[in-house]
Image (tube, rainbow, N blue to C red; front, side, top):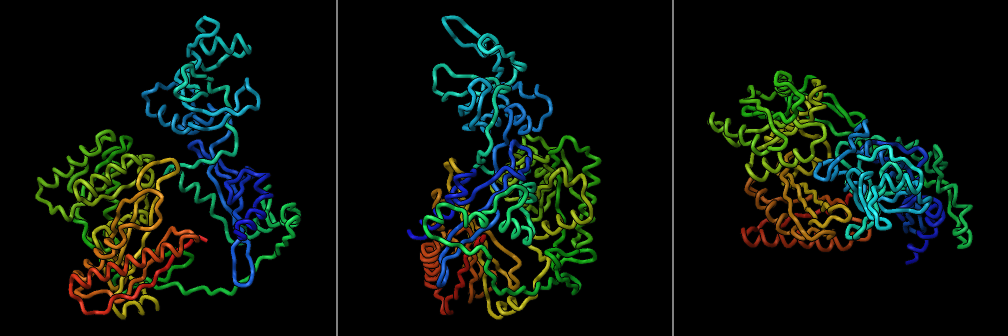
Length: 556
């Protein structure tokens, strides 16, 4: 309770003067539009935490995804990536209409005729200028009403407008899009589209020295919270004094482990990267049975064939014996499964080994729905390996890109790309061990879907090969309810592969907030021990049960 009060006092000043989400505040200075009707704002996160003998204030930079501000027409065209306003002349059955309606729902706006009064968008209306309603016992269109009442001529009567009354209202209020302005500082709480993720990462990436400078003194119009502590009326009245000089700690830079590839060649990564030129994979698996489905109508078959030759050459350079594809076929975005089935039938007609088949799917730049259907077909329906490639990257692919694709393909078939040499691995290899990783993925705000649980575990002496388990459970539950069964299956499978039981388990748990540490540790470590008891009892094992190192992975 006392910590929460201190937290409130620290945050209250800046939160009153800025857009905030409670934990962090944000400013439009230095913001960046990234397309898709979204923009990124910078801000600062603050948190009061207890430490040994003192209280600490943690401060860090933060970013938030906001709805783009401005005229609704401009924002809608930005969302659809269009340049012509006529692209907004949509009907209710159009996929773009439905996408826009979902995007704009519950956004706050001002209109040209209502001043600063804040209105909420509840839906869209096609051809808003021609929408008819009754006023004073006579029928009017929206454009006639605005001309008569406000002397405003509607420039685009045939494009969409917004509905400012709840859906069940008998007489909806429809306003043309050109008269509406989206207010700044509205948080986008849904999942950011995949094609915008890179722009978000680029915006968020700041060098440590620059991040510290921003925290201590602000930057580009951003007001540093640290500089405001002495002037905060809330801190002054509470008698709180916060030291504005950051604390220093002693740290050690760990040695980068050596990576061993084939032909006894090794490399030591520098700055997070390394070059594979001239390297062969540690354990390359031949690419014998592969076919291609091209879902990009803009890519000519000859171009696709040429690109696939580049991929095959990239795989051969890594030591993967690679045959020519058994077929390259065009795919239909509205008939994904049918296109994939056609390729699989051709493979079966050639009596190819199903376990060795992999389907390469070339997808348009923004096609998450097609990708999901390809993965569902391969992973759930047919049990066939798949590898998706993005059209934009394929078109400008070079040797490095095809080398990266080769790494993925080799891992798909269970090959070793490289092995790590480090003191930690050498110590673990002294006896059989498993590295496990677990997490719970929750649905976005307002989405009533189950949470997805996952466990990955290694089954080889280098911790380089992994198996994944997934499950579903009630939404918003942080502990993994099916962990006991997952761990049990992992240990049984490990024993069957290695003819021995694990002696140590390194368990990495992601996504646990500070307040849930004790609960997660108690429940999940208990579930793991129960799994050990089940396996040892059922298999009548006499070996000692594995020791567990339970590590919670935090972001801060």
